[in-house]
Every structure is written in structure tokens, then in C-alpha cells.
Image 1: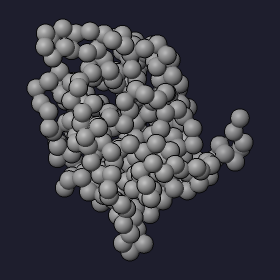
Image 2 (image 1 turned 135 degrees about the vertical axis):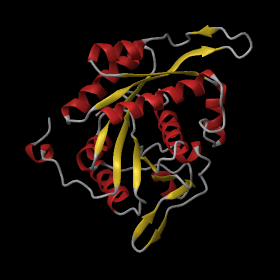
Image 3 (image 1 turned 45 degrees about the vertical axis):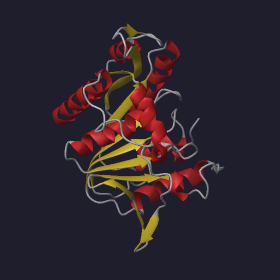
Image 4 (image 1 turned 120 degrees about the vertical axis):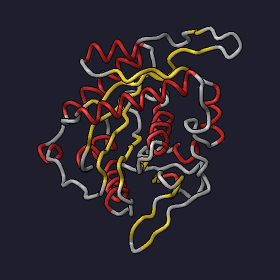
Length: 269
């Protein structure tokens, strides 16, 4: 149980971001970082100024997915300088501070909370249309801290896979968002079937429709499903963004539709 002191919300950080969107999942292994990276890239391609904040302190994968593993965070005028992916996309991650890519981060909650505040307050973010925050699985320290101190939180995106064990945990992430007064912008079902590249037949390896079912059950929007695609796997392993490089595939069309739906949702709220 939280103490009364823990329940008190700390002061909000001051950063120039019109919309802060938290990407959550109830459990690991659902492709949340992949979804975060591709949402950020899709928004940048649409001309938005985007920041991508990787808050998976213990398992930061965003730099790997963007081909930035050899980069480090620099300091200028006592401010952290984000790593540039493109003119429209900048990134901050714990991975940029580690001496080696296999170095663990062995921290307790207060140290993580201090780092998160630094990534917001002590970082020279350029004015942003969107700050996409990729969070670790669950509803622990990182999610609670950013929810309490980030300004202009437009809402959360809940990433799930179709299986019941995943959608059950996703419902907890939805309840977490509501308990902290954050709008749930929608549910994304990742790994939503596999389309054979040879014959075009759709195979529901992990089932299908679980994300849509939990969205309906919890009374939140369903943004869409992203099918398994070998190029999405390849892009994450090789360090290039699937969105912007691969087009006219079912997965690309799904992500494109999700972004259109998300923007429409944000504009309506």
C-alpha cells in the first residue's frame, strides 16, 4: 500500500511538449518498444517534431532498434543533449549512459525516479509536438514517476498481444491509467496474426482479437492490430525503422491506420 506521502503528486516538470503520450503494457514480450519506435517515426514522417524517451531503465532497447548503440549523451550548458535520429526525431535513453551494451543497471526505485526527472528537466529537448515515452512492462516506479511529473500528458497507449494472459495484464495498465487520471487513447494489438509472404494466407499464431475484446470490455478505443512481419523483426535487429523504409505491406498499412486513428483521437479530445 502507498503511504500518504507517496500518494502526493510531486511537482510537474517543465518541458516544451504539446503532447506527452505514455506507451504501456501489462507484461513483457508484446513488442511495446517496437510499437513506440514506429509510432515516433510515423509522427516524424508526418512532419511532427518528436521526442522519444526510453524509460526502460533496466532493459533499454530503443537505441538498438534505431541503430544508435554507439552513441552517447553529451552535455551542453549543464543540459543533456538528446541524440538526433533525424531533423524531426530526437531520443534519450539510459543505454546512452552505459559503459558497455551488456552493463546492467542495478538501481532501487529512488535512483530511477531521479534519473527520470533528469531526462525530463535536465535535457535540452527542442520544442516538441509529441513526446513518446516507452515504459517498461507493468505499473511500477517508472510508470508512476512519469505519470506524476510529466507535463501535458495527453494519454496512454496500451500495447498487448492477442493471448488472454497478455490482455488480462493489459486491463491492469488501463486501470492504472484511469486511477492516475490519464486518458486511455487506445489499445494496439501487436503480433495480430501472420500473413504468409508466399501464399498470402493469414495464420493466427497467437490468436486474434484479444486486443479488441479487452478494449471493448474496458470501454476504451481500439486503435488497431499489427500483424507479424519479418521486416519488423529485421528492422529491430538491424537498427532501422520499419516505418519509412517498408511500404505497401499489411503491417505498414496497419501502422499507418493506427497513426491516423490516434491523431484523430487526439484532435477530438
